[in-house]
Image (tube, rainbow, N blue to C red; front, side, top):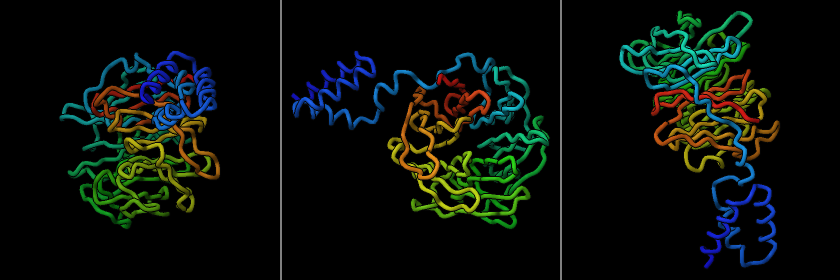
Length: 350
C-alpha cells in the first residue's frame, strides 16, 4: 500500500511545476501520517528537488568543436586572454599530443614536443606572456615530469627528473604527476599521484623550491589516495580532488593548513577534477566512473560547511569525463572525455 501511494505521489509531482511540487509536499506532510511514508522515501532520493532542476545551469554547445579530435582526450585548458583552448591527447605516433582550438571551435594548430603521455594541462597568463604547463605520466625518458611550453610548443623548462620516478624534493622527483595549477605570482601547486608511488600535494616557489607538502597515503586528515586535480580560489584556499577517497580537501594556500573536506556529495563516485566558475559561485566537478559533471554551490568564506549539488550534467555511458577547465571570460565549461575521445563545451545559462 505504501509503495502504491509513493508511486502515485511521484507521478503527481512529475506533472506539476517546481513551486507547486514544493507546496504539495509541505501540505501532504502536514496532513497526517498516511503520506509520511512517501515523504520519507522521497527524502532519501539522491536527486535534488525538482524546482532546482527545472532550469539547468548549463547547456551543451553542439557545434563545438568544428573539427573532431584524433586521439584520447585526457585534459583541457583555456587561454582566456587569447581565446584559445588547449587539449592534451594520447594515441599512436601520428596523433599530436597537444591540439589548439579557438573558443569558437576552429582548429588552430598542433604540436608534439617531448611529451609521452599528457595527463593534466594548465595555461598561465601573466603580463610577461602566456605559457602552457603539462604533466607527463609516461614511463620513458621524458616521463614523470611537468613541462612548461610556449603557446607554439617550444619547451621552456622541465620540473622533476625526466625518466625517473621518485619522491625526492631535492632534486625534485615525481611519479605520474596528475595536475598542476600555477598562480600569476608564479607559485605552483602540484598533485602527484595518478596511481604511482606518491599521494601528495606540493607547493613550490617560482624557482621550484618546496614551500610545503602533504604527502601521506591514507584516508585521514590531509592524507590522499590518488590526488587527481587541484585549483585555488579567490580567498586563498587550495582545493584537491582526492579521487579514491571520494572527497575534496581544502588547504590554506600560504601555510598549507588543512581547512576541511567535502565528502557528502560523493556517494556514487569520487571527484576526478575540480574547477571554479569565474564568479566563484559554483565548483565544477567531474566523475569519471559515472559519466557525470556536478555543479556544486561554491564553498562559503570561512567555514567550509557541507557541499551542496546545485545541478548535474549526465553524460552518455562510457564517455568518462577526466579533467575539466572553465573559461574565466565566458564561464563555459570544457570537459575532456577519454572514452568519447572528445572535448565537450557547456555554456552557462544563469
